[in-house]
Length: 260
View 1 (cartoon, rainbow, N blue to C red):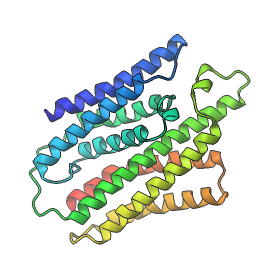
View 2 (cartoon, rainbow, N blue to C red):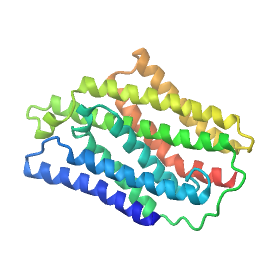
View 3 (cartoon, one colour):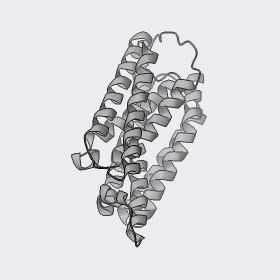
View 4 (tube, one colour):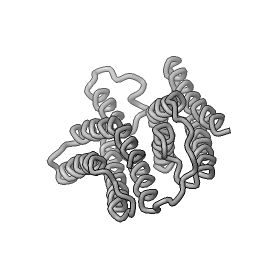
């Protein structure tokens, strides 16, 4: 049942991506509710999958890398659904769907093995892990918004902007969105990071160092951006680069959490 929910959610994101690519190929893309409905259905199935696993484990279902990837994709989708209608009905859904779909495909094919129910759960560890992944959802969407900013900026500089230009939000709106998502993600990440220090269960020092590195990079990026030292373009690039680094370190951090 859990695997069926996982595959079903992947198909929803695939439908959203396929619909957009087909519409763009035909040259008649119009922001509509199909992509929003497809992403909402995918997120609902992801939530069902996580709920089923959580009931079996008696803990937050982030014990294996596939579970972590699904939780991350679910967080990104929820933040996408939570933002304004003008974004949901623009091409942001087309940018969000392939990112979540990639995480889903990886989760389907990465072997996880059997996981026994968890006993003696440390609530602070659970809070730390779950909030950190929720924060990654906001930071992941800031990466997507940053990519959209760079695409739209390139369209503005082009003498002959393509049809996609009219379906993307204005660059100023995207720049504000990148900063707001960075701020929201950083605040949640900070709360999750603090919860880790309240845990009764010892956390490996190497994991703390990796987590602190990600926190410091986002702190520096956000401080420089809000102070004006970084322009909109550099902020968008930074949001993308730091998230990609965080994504690369995620399997390492997850593995250290298992060993701890």
